[in-house]
Length: 302
Image 1 (cartoon, rainbow, N blue to C red):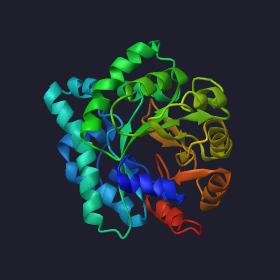
Image 2: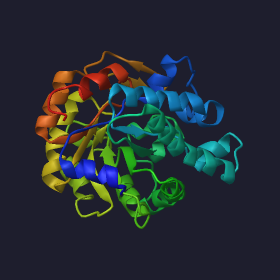
Image 3: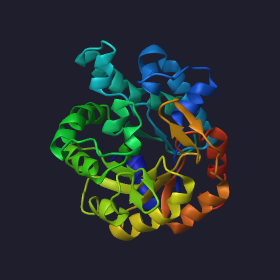
Image 4: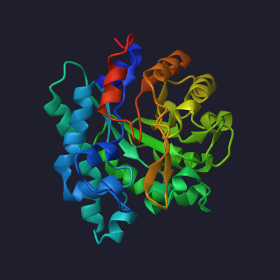
């Protein structure tokens, strides 16, 4: 763990995460309606990713989550990229966030979390909201480890094992991060008191309780309404700092590749999450810089 991030966690000060990468890129005019989603711009428009990170840092985020959610060897291979070029793009996701932090000229430490999306993100069919891929934890570990090795070599402050829908995949990820020398957080996508695959959150969070590599646990890309109970459970079961960055409350339509419904993400909810024990708070899909600014300026951050 780098000293700045370690010191920030040890201080007990609430940390602000960024918001959704895809909505910020779309707001800048980029079409993300393909299987690689924002990861496509790692190859085609990397400067746009840097600008998106910069917008969140300037809004008050302490931590930027990279654009590598769907950046995998398998997904890039479908576009004709060989292993060497794929590894370059995966590592570039960290470098672009670092460049944004340098350009931000902030008066506070800025950190980079390397996004590690679930197996379902590579499939690009919405299965990251279901889990149950029909693969063993051993097979999932073999899928995740090569990408994690590349990301660890790029030296992010933390690996964001995020939008994990299934405790079986969490088992695989916890094995895959061993020995990499970079800390990680483990973040499930949930519905009610269960993972998307249906496992009780007590059991799912307990997997990380004794994992030395995992420095925080929590939830992301879930409905804001599901955050308070998950935060309380994560803190109680693991004793680790809790991370919470839900989406706006809208629902992803995998067939139409668009969001449906209305936002239910409000600053008032954020205060409740912090009261429940969340230490790292931000937003996921459809949560933009204005909302992150309101979180960063809320009383109790300093």
